[in-house]
Amino acid sequence: MKRKSTIWISIVFILLVAFFLRLGFSKASDEENKREPKEKKQKKVDGFIAKPSLLITEITVSGSLLALEEVELKNEVAGRVVMINLPEGKPVKEGTLLVKLFDDDLQATLKKLEVQLAIQQKIYERQTELLKVNGITLNDYEQTGLQLSSLKADIEVEKTLIRKTEVRAPFDGVIGLRSISVGAIISPSTLLATIRTEDKIKLDFSVPEKYGPMIKTGMKIKFSTTDVEKQFNATVIATEEGVDASTRNLKIRALVNTKSPDLLPGSFSNVSVRLNENPDALLIPIQSIIPQEDTKTVIVARGGKAHFVEIKTGIRQASSIEVIEGIQSGDTIVTSGLQFLKEGSQLLFSSVKK
Image (cartoon, rainbow, N blue to C red; front, side, top):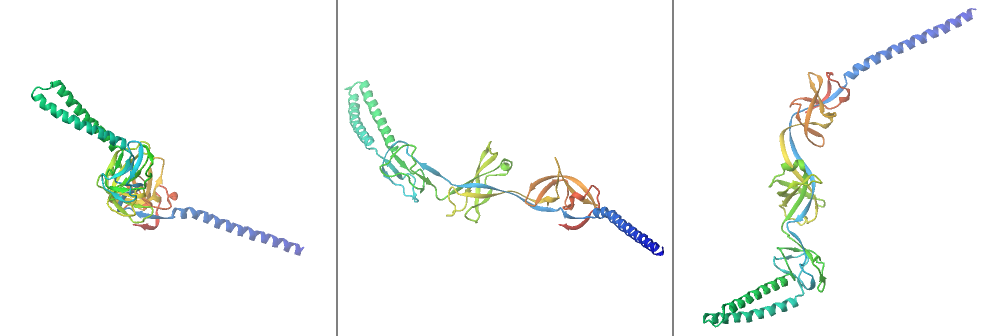
């Protein structure tokens, strides 16, 4: 009996020890759970002090380099090419004869008219003397004068037709690659070659319509090409004065100030346009913004507590954004832990950047 009593006593003792151990663990867990909300309230956040900074409004767009003057050389009439003076890649002067078409028939007609004109001129001179002594009627004299004027007009027409068989340089420039040979039969749509000015290059690019009012004649811009890292300068000379209805962009034209063999007409370019500079802009980190449906909000530290303030923003950069209304210089903006904070929450900063 004593042995059984001892066993039962041992079992009861073990059960009591297990009960009290479990009770102790349960109280410790309850204490931890009670401490967790306090720890959450004391979660540290990062801050940023807003202060005036230099804000440069700059946009980057694509553009194309073009010769200041460029023309596709084509003839006005069809015909056979009898002479070519298209020095590829070399300069020519304005008025230089570049291409000549067959015009023997026109030249023959011109000579015939010139002979007729010479004969008619002599007849007119004799009749002028006869008219002085009443040796000819006034009507005959006027008819001769009319024929003389008609021949002169016919000669001018023939000379015009002959000029149409010639292609001359419209301005001083460089000839491109020719696409014809002597003996070719060409039409008015046949491309003979191109001619471009070599001393000046223009740059065409487009900007979104909201930046249009900021673009002024004389504005300096910078650009670079895909093959050359060096930046070149250009000056705005004109705008389209109308927004493209399909793209909502405004076309701009600038004159390149630098002459370089790296700048070839038709090349692609990256254009940087500096629109404005604001030395007193309030810039804050983008991650501090709490976007809502129609507004934007930031958390401002005032008296050690969090206050939600609605703001209006301006220019956005890679990592910061301009605030134009809602905060002032010197305000401390919360930049992390935004999801844990409520209006009036106590703030504990781990770091504050200036």
